[in-house]
Length: 211
Ligand SMILES: N[C@@H](CCC(=O)N[C@@H](CS)C(=O)NCC(=O)O)C(=O)O
Image (tube, rainbow, N blue to C red; front, side, top):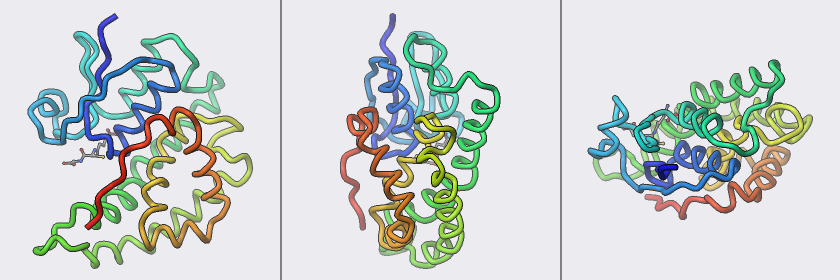
């Protein structure tokens, strides 16, 4: 079997999801720590984003597609439920995380702290403030979603949790989102419990530098 390479910066929540998928599945991989827009990424992702994946002649981009490949190409515990309703609900939550939660919580809020586009590179307060009302609503939705079972879907860890927990990990470290999470103890407990899972604990990104 050729070596599987996950390409991207370990701080990326989406790179982390792919590493969680490999670890859950027991698939050995090498993390190639390349940045968005690097030649290696540009050769695979049409919009030059991370993660990308190489496995012999197979190259892929987009975290959901990479996780699907890891799940289907290798033996090991299935990452997706067999039951059609549960399967669809996992896809539903992955889509909600990717199309609603990540754009507000990561691209708008967190990036305004970590990669601000302000002239002096200080946190972009206007963008941060603008993200807060939406983030508050999203945290309430997520708290309600995990309340019944401690998982997004059913009573076991799924790929839906693998997509969400990395985002909550970063939100817990930032002032406004940390305060929001502190007021949602069930969601915070969900984060702590899943972050202690071997596939997350073993792939935890290095601490993030904040401006
Ligand atoms: N839909 C993509 C999103 C990937 C993404 O947004 N990656 C970020 C890092 S977490 C990135 O490459 N950002 C740099 C850029 O947009 O130029 C996926 O699921 O893989």
